[in-house]
Structures are given as C-alpha cells and as structure tokens.
Length: 252
Image (cartoon, rainbow, N blue to C red):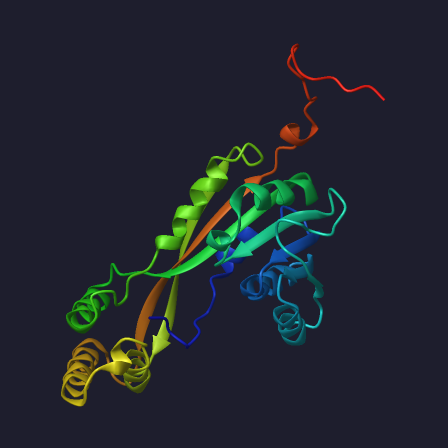
C-alpha cells in the first residue's frame, strides 16, 4: 500500500545525495528522474536512462532539461568516466547486481559516486502500526515492505564500491480521511472483499483516522528516505591480468 499524495522531499537528503561538485549525473530508471531533477537544481547536468523508450520519453516530457537515452543498466552506451555520479532510486533490487555495478564503475569518473535511494513507509509511529494491525486482519500481507533493501548488500560486497555510507531522512506526507479510505479500498486484495467485510474495514479505518487526526489538519503519513553513497574504486577495472603458468597460450 502506498500513498498517492506527495510531501516535501527533504532538502537535506538532496544535498547528501548530490555530487561533491556539480557535474554530469546519470539517473538509472524512470523512478530516478524526480530525485535527479532536484539534484540538477544544484547545478548538475542530468541524463536519464531506462530500458523502456516510453519510460525515457515520459521522464523527458516531465523534465525537459534532461537528456534521455534508452539503454539497459548493464550495457550503458557511454564512454568510460562520463559521469560524476550514478543515481538509482527505488530500483536497485531490479538490476543484475554484478553486471550493473561494473558498468556503473566504468562510466564513473575517478572520485565519482554511486548514489542509491529508497523511500519506505516508517511504521514506528503508533497510529500507523494500528492501521497495519487493522488491515492485516483482512490481508496478512498488507503494509509489508522493505524486502527490496536486500539489494544494498550487493553494493557493500562489490570491489568497485568498497566504502558504503548510509543516512536516513524523515519525510511526512499529508493524507486526508477520504484519501486514506480511498487508499485502503483501492488495494488489490482489499478491493475484492465482500460488501459486509469491506464496510466493516472502512468503518474501522475511518474510526482510526478520527481518533488520531487533529482536525482540521490532516494526518501525516511518515516515510523514511534511505540513502546510500559510495565512491568508485577503479583498481579492479585497471588491474593487470595474470594468467596461471600452466594456462593455455595461443600465438598468432
């Protein structure tokens, strides 16, 4: 379950994710476009790439200052050392880690950085935990998230990015009573409930909202903006290849 509303993205997260100095930035995947646009306001020049030509076109339509290139993340059509930063938002878990990380290292300039961002709901707030408990009576898988974060381990294990830094930033997204009821009722599994169960569920969610909100202000749905960054190490790409003494030698 995700919220369709938008809150103010924390400027501190943008500052932390941005390159040390303004320079060329490669945003990988359509989901990276919004954060890349925020970083570009600090002076970086953004290029967006995605395997889908339609996704690239949609991103460029929304952010006309970006250059769009259709390409797979593990076969980037750029010369080595083209970018000061590679940015991946909400999509690291969708990439082939070994191949993609090697490509990111190849296209990064010396001293360049890989930046990764995931925005996840923060369930530490009491009313959010109570909402999850209500929904899981009807759908045990409701409001479960975060499994995609396992992909961060592949960066930590990569020889191309030996030191991985991490920061977390809080973001609050306002949601109205009607917005919460619509959000719950549009969830694929919950949308298939029969009428008596659906009515009971929405009544419980509405009561939770009424007891938690301070009218006329809306409730604030908390999110954590999780950020990682790592400076590239090119030594693996430039190391001399040593063949074993008993290896096969072919002469031409």
